[in-house]
Length: 527
Image 1 (cartoon, rainbow, N blue to C red):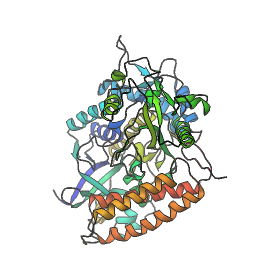
Image 2: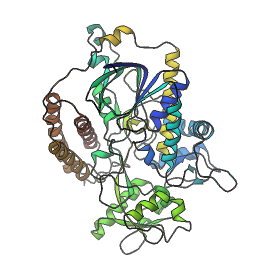
Image 3: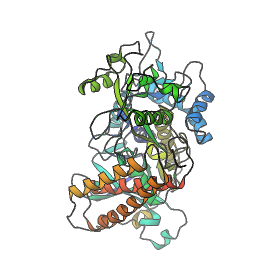
Image 4: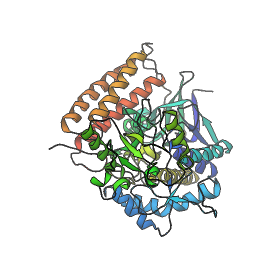
């Protein structure tokens, strides 16, 4: 393998958006290279999704779905993006997931797809497969990706930086151009430490979420904002960075990643109860346990403060008249492993950082403000979620924007809109900045601990001006130290991850400081 790899389209990230974008482009005849940092394609958050994916229910409409999304998003959503999702989403889902890939969603006895209810929805419109919906979606996508002759899959590849003409071109003539164009990415091959230059006519960021910058999260280890940080350095516009959705019900236990107790459990009828066994959500919202996630999360925090306990309970055994082990097999098994039988007793739960509602600003084609750079999925801000995500809309958003990105890139290639040879030649190979072998695992672990505790305590569920100022100062200083360390030290995956994670935390904190208005996932408690 040479240090330079050329491809028509480079897709960074292998979740629902990355795979759908790659498949859509490949089916149009494009040469696609799909890379991911993990050793397998399914190591992102998509495979962890439990509850389901929004479709369209009985007595439902695009208008009703849009109304629910606007309500959950505190009317801060992009109207055009929401209309696009609600109008095109069910059609695209039917074509790709039901017809083409035949994803095995749950069915009724007579064969129709079974639709379930989730918090914030006015209709039962969610397709699901037990409590491992994301798993069956990823399984179907991976089979299709592996079969495609036009997709080259490369695992164990960590993207370092997006290549742009303003930052990486060695041609003075090209750097004087007003339009900043993306030309691919510098990528670290994890196994060898070699940094390769990927030159691409079109680049797609589908790198997932940012949950790992928080102490408690439901996200996978790779969810640390890498695409978000790279886009920021490339000059792409970001939007709604302060809106971090905390899932109200993760299983209370010790561990690097909290296990998610799906929203669908409350959708089926489970209720949150306090230490006295009293269902308390009715005290906070007329929708009770089916209120949007931001409201439920803050209610749980308030109950925990009242009782002084570290968790509350989610009672499914008392309120759901179904076979819980059959409806929620993954949750049931994981709870049993930790000594909790959800069929007989309530589940201890606590909020955890779950979903990034903001991200890299994109339009309905997935285009960013940097030419030839696309973004989709959780790292992107389409405008669909506004200040708070409605349950199960994220998988549909990832599907729709993956499809839209693929279609748009394919149409541009068909028109001959490719990078010219002179521009590609002007992008130099990676320049080694430092060769010091002084990466200390203890220091890396300590820096991560500082980031996670700072974000959890100061930029968490409830935010105050003093807390945010403290976080800003601490993260600014850490960013400065890491920037110098990054230049002096031979790069490795742990160091790249730390650099991206710290930048992501700092960007989120800065946005949270600027926004003094409480809405949705950004909740200020200043007097």
